[in-house]
Length: 314
Image (cartoon, rainbow, N blue to C red):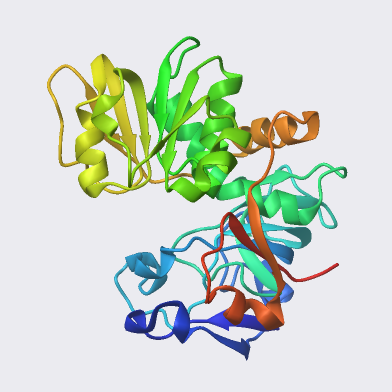
């Protein structure tokens, strides 16, 4: 099968190569040799890639700390189940699925991928594969940050950083639907895009002062660093700072500060995809490219707004 591989952590996305790799062996999967209990093989139709995943240790080493290069990146998948291992429940061969793959195993920038069945959700027939791949990581991250960790309630004020980006735009839409007042942030060029995706107002982080904002109940942070530290001071007593950018440097008394790593969830994927079907949630896709063009698409010469999706099949 064709696949994108990486071998050099220092090279970043520029070190990506399109190569031939062995297909997952259905016979071995069925006999549990080289597979885990409950695995399935998915024929990949569309794959998502997160921009910083080549900086994650799990891209380069397995759970025991052993080198696993050449590794296949990508953790968001939409496709069709082609084989089942022992212990698989809730899925069948030929079924359309989408979901999030394991961090320490070969990923989805390939024609086939082996995934734990519990990490996948059925994909309704009226949602195309490109859309499905684009909502996996942003949708789960936004949902978990807002509702699990942020405990969002109607009527609250929410500050969403990077509101024009793939994750931020999803968080803005979900927060607004839940009855929150959404303040988006980012660069000036993203103002209209952030407003279009649900922000009630927008703060240009290069020209406007965060500190001029009134207090907020929840900060959804994708930047960390100085922005995260400054944002902590905006959280009202009893409020929460939620970040995906690592442990926050500022943890003010009387407020909750939480950093988290997104986790697979079949139930949450069902919630997100239903909102897409109802028209309550829109994807933020910047570029769609074929696998043969994936290396170039993931190394753009100009800034791409939105999610880059690699489409492997029509």
